[in-house]
Image 1: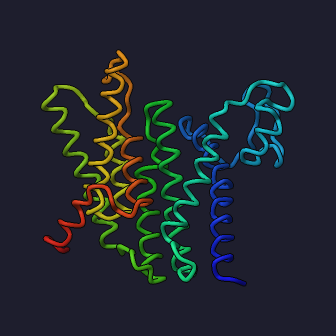
Image 2: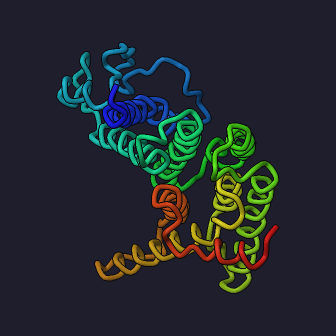
Image 3: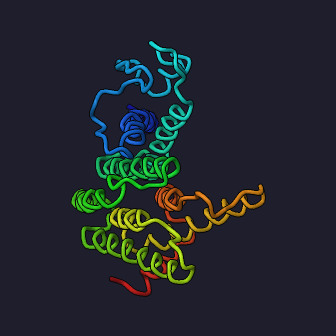
Length: 278
């Protein structure tokens, strides 16, 4: 088969895999805030109707059902197909990031696509839950740190060029958690109130376990800039920027951007890594 055609097909399959990954993602968004498992059969929250496999197809089922439950006709929020489409787009972007050329279509680079797809989907869940409930589930933060360390080992074993290794993964988790905790304490002392949730501390530990310590500078900078811009926009619209804006989604934006855009956003971490090698 033509290598370019095979590469294009693989990119399409990556997008489809992202759509399929949106099924547990949407379940996690709904259930993890209440400490429920994602493995129970999905049901309509209004009438309890158990959804069939066809009724769970990303985007297609919502369109086919016209955004309503097949039994009780209650509306299915349009945010669900939006999340599903987002997961598909992100998976395709990750494929293009790690397999930019047909000659790079191999197991090593596809492993990187898989690892960072998991990482990205966790951040999508975290962001939506934080926006809805202003909490960050441990499943998407501190409990995912071992996953980050294991996947760092996996990428190192398969010879992925960008693998950080288990040492830098552990160091990244420690730097992310302790660094964010220091910011947490300083903010509380200076302002006299808790300026961020402790979930942000655990979230940065998770991000550090996947990306290593040097990436955290870029993630924090990008998240802070976007968060400040959102606050200014709220003020311009006459809203209280200090009320109900969780920081976690902005950190997630910085963390996803760092991966998808190949470290192009204020990569001070790369400079420091050259000056202070570990």
